[in-house]
Image 1 (tube, rainbow, N blue to C red):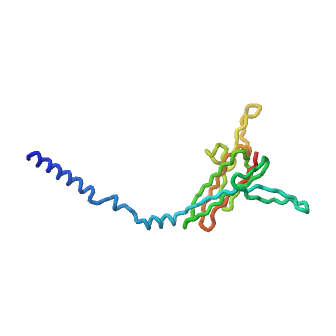
Image 2: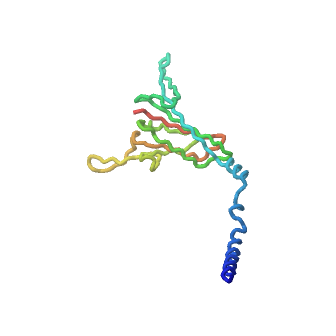
Image 3: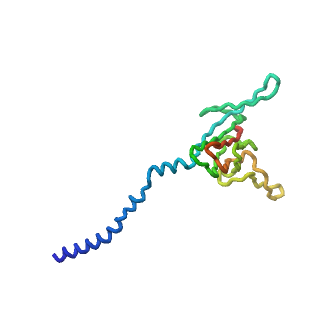
Length: 187
């Protein structure tokens, strides 16, 4: 009986210590209102990207002028060495607020060579390039070339060394969206 009283006494003290810890129910009290979560999510910018590719076709008109047309390509379309392709990335902001500092990075596909000065955007994006598999990006990539006399000089990187292109959009509004494009030549 004496042992039972001691156990009850220890149990009561233990319960007295534990109850204040659970009295406020912090897990239940911190559950946010689901309506407010949905409202916040809708207000956030959400940019959905789409990639399209078109093949350049050049025709000579009856008056001898060259006319360029772009034919949209479907998945698994056949292309031949020498063909010029234009990749277009469009972004639609489906949120209610503008997306700030959106970076879109596109790898140059295998067996393709970037066509110099073809990268552009319709939204005044800063365009940078990588020649090291997307590790670093600069506006004008250079390589180090060792001369015959042993000196090393920096030269503009050749188009075949480009591996990625990045567009940095300062602001993408729901009304405006974002558009970027570049051209490559099939090897």
